Image (tube, rainbow, N blue to C red; front, side, top):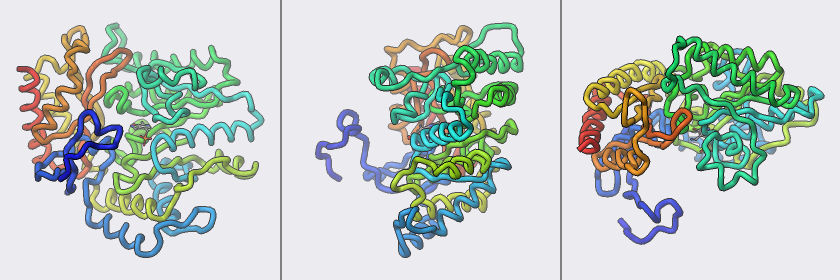
Length: 440
Ligand code: PMP
């Protein structure tokens, strides 16, 4: 192992150990230390590490052809992956465009929406409403949609500044409304915003169905989702679901949208779609939306690596594994177990203010007062400290200092969908130990 200084931006300040190998839910560093990958990297490694069947399928494709440019050849991996993806989608979403990551997927969705509006004779529609807090990526277009000031502000003059509405943070609301009423209250913010912006200028609304890095597995009340769909329809605004983190089975359904029976106009996916076996993502939309764009001269968009056969063979093998091993059902069942275990922690640690999520996208939030939900003081650096305490003990979790509307510390616990109940218990032993050290 080399201890030489690193040339990498992200390893010069807080260098991590060298990764040696992965196996299932575990990662091992070069010293032989084992880590439970309790966040699947950044909610990526949905089927676990080094899956031998997936590796064999990628290898088989490697032996044939690693690259064929999509405009020069059709390839079986890309056609088969597209067909399989469409089968897993809500009805009517039957056109697929591949990309290599989440930010690319979000930007592709917006550009498709814009080109579609032009084919409809609506050149004035360009505004894309999004929510705060939210995370949609780090390239300029995706960042403009991201509702998180510390990431945006340095670059703000270089972006358009798309309109934002508050994402539901009902666990912080102190009012007498029912959950259903609260969901509607937040959905109406979209209607008000569309009207304030002039409906004929609004192109699309983009949302994470369950907040990920931004709000920590924050699920809106059920009433929110259907009402948002209605409002978009009322004004001819396209509904884009950013399922980059929630898609590909993470929440116990292939898409989180299925929990509420919503068919978005465009879905963006990545992360678990390639599951760490390839940089891969996709946008999926209906022919109704895509065909007019193609008729009008084509989608003015595309990345060199889009739909390359190697990445697509990995994606195809990942979807096959999800199906053959019933991993989406496992995510739903193990998600209930994990959520129950996290809730038990609230009895032991008064500074855990909230536990939430769906399937295996779960989170807990630290507060200084559970009654007022006052966050911990910033200077405590809780989000860093607890992650380091867990890491030292061999558990990887993922933290951010944002939450609904204000700043606060939340921690995502999102292990690979292959996890078993015994492994969840092992994970909780380490997490409790880290929380004890944090409390002392
Ligand atoms: N959208 C969501 C919901 C995400 O969670 C992320 C990544 N955290 C992105 C988009 C951006 O994906 P990428 O980092 O692959 O560009």
